[in-house]
Image 1 (cartoon, rainbow, N blue to C red):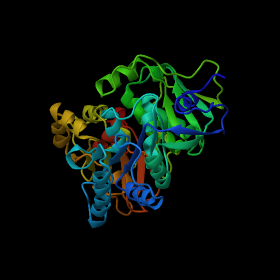
Image 2 (image 1 turned 180 degrees about the vertical axis):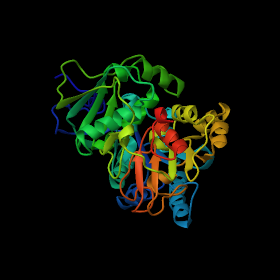
Image 3 (image 1 turned 30 degrees about the horizontal axis):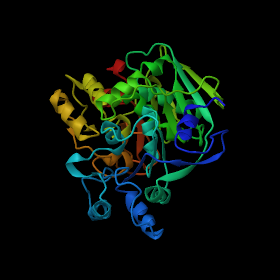
Image 4 (image 1 turned 60 degrees about the vertical axis):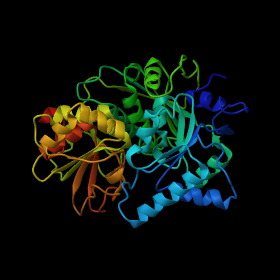
Length: 420
């Protein structure tokens, strides 16, 4: 039976024959991930089930990124639980402090996840690694505890929706726009427990950082995974980031069965914005209206990579952030932070009046370093805009690409680069 990309990856990790969607299969995992919010719950469950040792100290990663640098006593104690467990188990991949970045940017950068892997994480945006051709998905902390102990987990084989992008990418259109277009089309539950498989000439030309951005938001359409085939672009990225020696492509079989197909011609499209309070509430930026803003966030596991920093700098160079707007820039990892500094991007940001902070999730989840007050409105390169996500229940978050976020910071209202 010809297999989709999801089915092929699952098949490589089980002795069972992977067949039709809905089948339950037990698969070996390549990496198990948790963070400073979810790992303490996983540790508690790990203890409760009587487990003594993790299945492989090299295949469990704890990344302290959500409330760090620790903002209060509670968050410090959360990290303390994680640190002690990592020391007890001898975890190779424990990240806190100067070597720590936003988990879903950090792990690909370090070569810890890659093509054909199965990755499970106690964080919904674990699906990011599908940008590298990994079957990667978020689980609850109890399931992650089981995976830490056993090294395997069960999955229901998902049906697959094929998403195809054709046409010519306009100057200011980015990967963030491509995924928001899809979510706007099918809704936040349009891919519920489905695999989203992205292809087409636009995808073939997209760099890996763009692919990671799109896979990151597969969950915002309800997706189990968001998957990109492995090609020369993927292999070049992996060679640069600790996974050399890959020689083969990984793609769906010809004749694979898809539940449905969604197609977009991007020619002539303008950037889009997801308006409150759901990622599916998508509009072209020119149709959002002249809405004043008080904050801009450029960063997160969606858009905190070096290409995103460069995009923001192109728009901000020689310009000033509008009075009354806080523009907060958070490079996603120490490597991105250093590269941005080396390229002079921090000078562009600070000259424009931005605040540059450390690698952290921070404001994305309403954690710290950029909380919204009553009635405040923000444009963010993050992935969720639920009511109260970034602070007050009376605040509003608009999701956009770094070029739109930077343009809005300068304009003081929601705007695209062409509107400056």
